[in-house]
Amino acid sequence: MEYLAILLVYALERYRKLVPEVQYDNWLLTFSRFLQAGIQRLGLPVRLHPLLLIGLPCLFVAYLQYRLDHVLFGLPEFLLMVGVLFYSLGRGDFGAAVSDYLARWEVGDIQAAYHVAGEYSHYPQLEESADIAQLHRHTVEALLYQGFERWFAVVFWFALFGPWAALMYRLSCLYAESPATSTSANREFVSRFLRLVEWLPVRILAFSFSLAGNFASCYRVWREQLGRGGYSAAVLLRICAIAALGEGEELACQRPGDENRESAIRCGGEQVKSLQQLLQRSSVVWLVAMAVVIVLIDW
Image 1 (cartoon, helix red, strand yellow):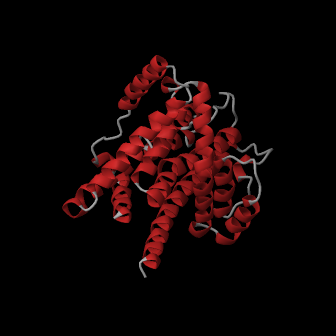
Image 2 (cartoon, rainbow, N blue to C red):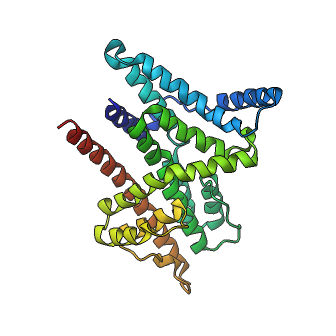
Image 3 (cartoon, rainbow, N blue to C red):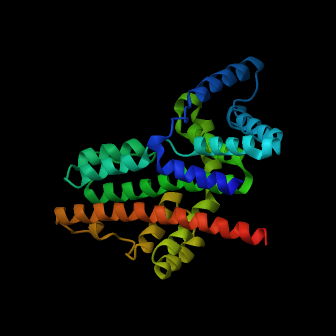
């Protein structure tokens, strides 16, 4: 049933514009304020705020799934899975944002492209004086991490533990990104938790790039990076993704001394499009791999 829910949500995500908007997060801000008031009134530790804000909705979803098990041939439980999984995906139309970025990049409006990239990137922002190479690398890392965060990480935890785990990941992301719902200390606490829960799925996705691209080049780089520490998820994904495209770690348009602006812009646009396609192929690899695992388990 979980696999059918993933397939359905994959199709809904592909045609997001035809699906009614269900990813409303205003309730989270209201719930956060209610918990903050209760914690202050009872004199409880502030550190309980993220645990309650994230944990209580997850417990509620797990309880609902338990109560709906085997009710009406599992249809209510299936609808719950689909609804929670779709809600747990990344926010906004990421494909449209990347297309908007490319439209500005390809006409050479680097500053406008910078601002578009900043809207969908949760990374520390570059200075507005950033050159083409800096902006391109920043965008590549943001593109790959956002692709991972909005789909792959969610599906990984959903497939492993069910809808409550997918919701846990999304609420953690929302908490870490929203100053309005949390203190800086609590956001840092949740960010460390996110780095922990992302460690395994980000490395599985990096390996998936080898199956969706140049296997020999990507697998060699993936194996070399596997034992190294200190890399963020985005940097690891960039290194492996560039290898999967059959290129060196340094992109052609990032090499020092390249003064051909038009060539650099054309190179960068083509690479962003190639990375989008790599993420799409990797999602298919995951769907096929999950199907194979299900067949082997039921063998």
